[in-house]
Image 1: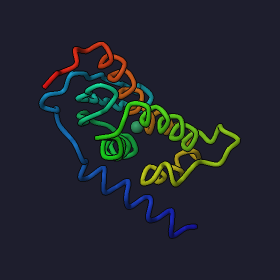
Image 2 (image 1 turned 135 degrees about the horizontal axis):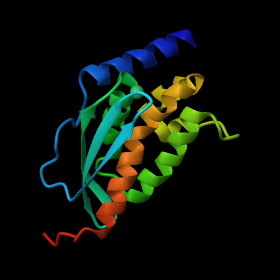
Image 3 (image 1 turned 180 degrees about the horizontal axis):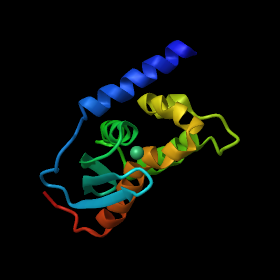
Image 4 (image 1 turned 90 degrees about the horizontal axis):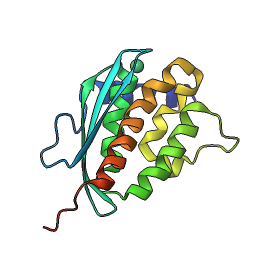
Length: 151
Ligand code: ZN
């Protein structure tokens, strides 16, 4: 179990140091900003949504390792997936980091996102991990109203 934890920590630090999908997204048709005053994390998520699908995703901002790694892994995991899938994964991820659900997390469905399992032991960090997800949800809500490109 401790090896697993080290592996998870390494992955989080790696994504913190080398965030994927970092920067403003060209062609984004929705975005939203999230702020976590408890920690000072600030993240803007950009998405290009067509129909019910998230064609592309990126983020920018600054914050702690947990928040930045969460944004990096989230954008990696959800680019090219459907909004339905993102909604389902959000619920799974929320359960994973809060430990509130009676069910054990669906590690298969979560894939790499399972690295945030340890966050449940640090309740103050839960908001750091979920901030990018809340920003994404706000962006997608916006995107649903955005004109759909016919190209
Ligand atoms: Zn934080």
